[in-house]
Amino acid sequence: MSAGQPGRPGVVVSGMRPTGRLHLGHLLGTLRNWVALQADHRCHFFVADWHVLTTDYEKPRDVGGFAEEMVLDWLAAGIDPERSIVFRQSAIAEHAELALLFGMFTPVPWLERNPTYKEQREQLVDRDLSTYGFLGYPVLQAADILLYKANGVPVGVDQAPHVELTREIARRFNHLYGETFPEPQALLSPVSKVPGTDGRKMSKSYGNAIQLDEDPGQIEARLGRMATDPRRARRTDPGDPADCPAHALHRVYDTPDELEWVDRGCKTAGIGCLECKKVMIRHVVEDLEPFREKRRELAARPGWVREVIEDGTSKARAIARTTMAEVRSAIGFAVPGGGDS
Ligand code: TRP
Ligand code: SF4
Image 1 (tube, protein in one colour):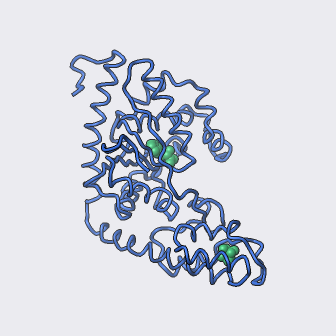
Image 2 (tube, protein in one colour):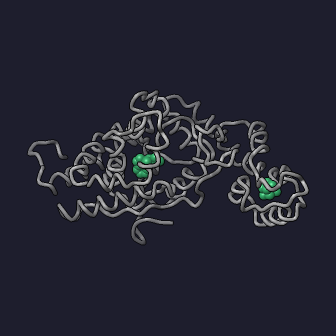
Image 3 (cartoon, helix red, strand yellow):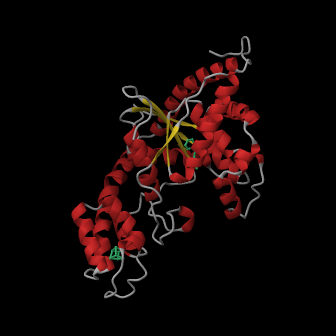
């Protein structure tokens, strides 16, 4: 996976909404992807706090507190502030300015046919999402991405339509006002849709998530009860790993030999489900141990997360200002003495 041209580091941007502590799905599906990209890309990772308001405008909650907790999880997972720029979206008003300008030429039907828009409006029935802000969610996301002229956007498959829309917005801007933005690619995570203990997509709101700070005993107990192929109701009934939610975690963690053992044992009823899951559970516990240790260590450094965010914000702001000066001049809105420096 790479973005940009050979021999030149690509520019990567991605964001996450601060809605609480992270779980195993975030670690495997998103963070590991981010951490790997740091090796050879200039990465920008931000807390998408304005995006929270598109659905939770009635109760913005403690997004500030969540932001720092979430960034601590990022850092414990291996995001390196010496290499990557870490910041909060709402600290950089240029995101809003660029989103406003993009909104001028983004056709409403592009937004209405966005699959996430339709889906979420049906699912989140407890609030009124017939708002301008919610419809415009992907326009703000396009601004987040293009403000830093990203070539690559690491996201899960569910976000791919938003990156596609970003490309269309970039193309339209370039066509109207002159070549300014690259057309970014979605860099899909190799691990997508990590299932939770009940087999549905892992999500805090389903109560099926393995939190990153759970202790080993808890992890063992909860994964020990994780959903398996329903055909294996009795120990003697054979099953198929392809129909087993727990097997998704085997695929992430097991060695080829272990996978082979699981496959044969499952299909011949040679092994029991708990016996099978124990192999994967040991991997999960071993994987999370260093994470928890690092997080404890980092949490003991008072004020450090805040410093990381402040430092990242000033770096991001400098880039954002440069892009906006270019954008204003492209559309003929450069303001004399307007502070475009
Ligand atoms: N929409 C993304 C999500 O829900 C979060 C996000 C906001 C984002 N802006 C972004 C992701 C820019 C990548 C790039 O997960
Ligand atoms: Fe899943 Fe393993 Fe049970 Fe097969 S034996 S259903 S792969 S837990």
